[in-house]
Image 1: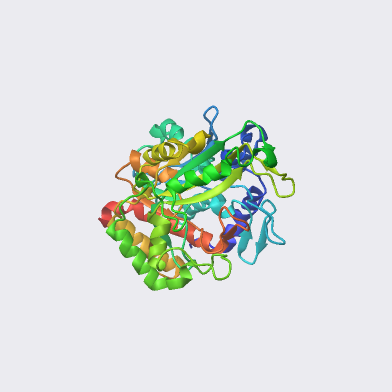
Image 2 (image 1 turned 60 degrees about the vertical axis):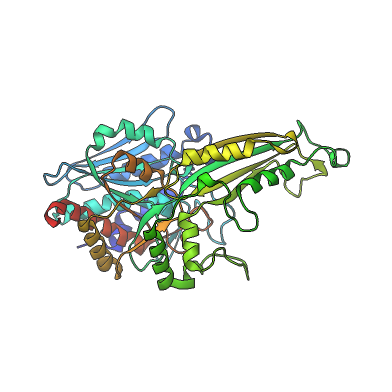
Length: 467
């Protein structure tokens, strides 16, 4: 029998709930992560749960490279004679709470309401360890043969996966001949079917600081003489984004949109229409960007965008005085089309933001980037397996769509294993609120997705017969 919600509640929910209480923030949000020990506590909890699985031949390792976040590696040996490897990927680091959660909810005090679990990290991406291993456990419990599988759970994905390449180098021999990659860190447009991600945008993060003084000065004596750092910042931002339309003005951040992506956007728009974005908590009468649903889908998945995600140098209104501030820092998040090189885009941004600075202000730019990803053509055996699994466990045929987020692991694996088949999917559907307040895991969707993973791994072992 496939996995049921009762199975998940019995074997996984208690540990997932404990994981939800751990403040295992990604290193970008916890500079002292090593001393604080939250990432270590979370990965040891997951490793302990993994060691309790009833798999025939498996090994659980917490792999550590000096000065890098740890990685959980669970190797499940083949029960057939297939020498290829299936990699099942997830991550266990978390975003910060963001703000005050709704009444009765808290980021680190998990709450279950009906079949939904609310806490930071449960959907992004704490469930992944449980889904991957319970899928394999389900196969073995039913005596269904499977190939060699390696479950890889990293601890710095929310920071852009800066440690990932080092671990891929370190584990290269262990991973062996990877032929299928299952990524459990993506989204779903609805909960009524399996959604497979066909592309992901890249990312460039830029910390931009404009400084005009070595210390703040009374605005009565300095304003009108010393230029405002915020005004200069505005001018620099106008170089990279059209303030009226949101269009990105730096050519290196744009990429050609494939015909297939444009067709898919039109098809999704035709099926779902305005309900695609009806769950966004926008204020009344807000005009959405884009001329129609299809254009909004392409904006979200294949066009560059800018989000100003943080600022420094501005005191809170309660503590602010009439002072001309010495500096303003803006943290800029640029989403890139899947086919744009992040390093090239970052270099272009740094060049545009630092040349001919108005008024001779001092400008510093620090950036990091991650490439996007576009799925290779799906093999017929995999396409059939996904359709069958979606029909069986969700009741509808599989859906394919691009995502606006970034998963550096996919780009890294795509470069290393150009012939590999990919399944990028996940539970981040409506109201899941990843990175926002009130993050939520829909438990029936988690169980259905776990069964899908089991079916795909089973189908992989028969791929040669099916071709």
